[in-house]
Amino acid sequence: MRPFVSALALLSAAAQAGAQEPSTAPVLAKKGLYRQLTEPPCSYCATQDEKNLVRPDDRVVAWLRAKHQGGAIPLRHFLAAPRVINDTYGLFFYDPDGGYVSAFEKDYGYEFHGWRRGVMVVRGRDGTLFSALTGLAFEGPGKGTQLRRIPSLTTTWGHWLRLHPESTAYDLFDGQRYPLAELPQQPSAESLETMGQVDPRLPARAQVIGVRYGEETMAFPLENLPARACFQDSVGGASIAVFWYAPTQTAVAWRRVLDDRKLDFYADEISPPTAPWKDRETETRWTLAGRGIDGLLRGRELPWVDSVQCCWYAWVAEHPQTKLHTPSAEPAPKKTP
Image (tube, rainbow, N blue to C red):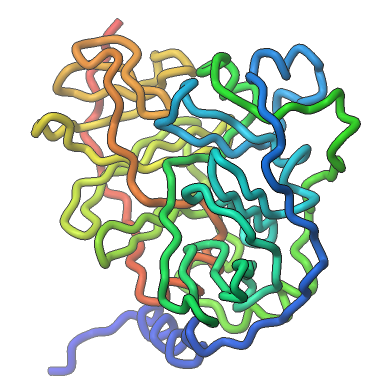
């Protein structure tokens, strides 16, 4: 008897067969459309907040696991206009069409170049073209090289400030030095023109967090979720936990193993907004930044997993063979004071 195959699986297979692989998709070049920013001087989040130039709900990309408890870049002030920052803190690419900011180890000489499959393309100093989402070079002298991602997440200025007021930020110069640009609300014509056919497993612009471990990738859907949630799965043989916090529209992925102990996480409704997750083994509370606030693991940090929060079309364009997380019923968490 012929095995049953779902209509969705057939549609997905047809879409992948009809779509071009990322390596062969054409690039729409718009070199010079945006001017990159290099090494803006830095200050501290608390100091910059006193200027009242950043709104509490402003989106920021925050980098983690660095001195000064990491740092945050307000997108509206520093990335909405140039799209690319070359800096000692890292290399940052902002693609509003794909709904993501990707952060890589420090490097210089990168600039906006155009779009491919709806995803932003950047150009290195030797002419090599990179996917802004994955950091993988697909054309030019450095083809096949991979930028190394640094731990990061996207959240709001107000929430990050509550977690780490001592972290670093770029100096706003009272708003006079850098061009201020509101975040685009509609996808660009160029992104739509190059997007092509999108895997129908999810709507093209559905929000996901894409996770990579080893050679395997998985997308975790972020639509219609409660205010705080936790999803656990295995990616590339590693046990992964994804924290989701709806008030800041933030998702971030962590390894579940710390000191050879596997932790079982859950979203705790009675925990404070600064640490909404707990693990059942030690009852430690955890922040978005993966830091233990109280409990047996207070002061410890979870290992970050290579991941980026983005639109489904962008993730699947670069990872056409990606798996899709299916939520399972979780046991009810214990109620603790």
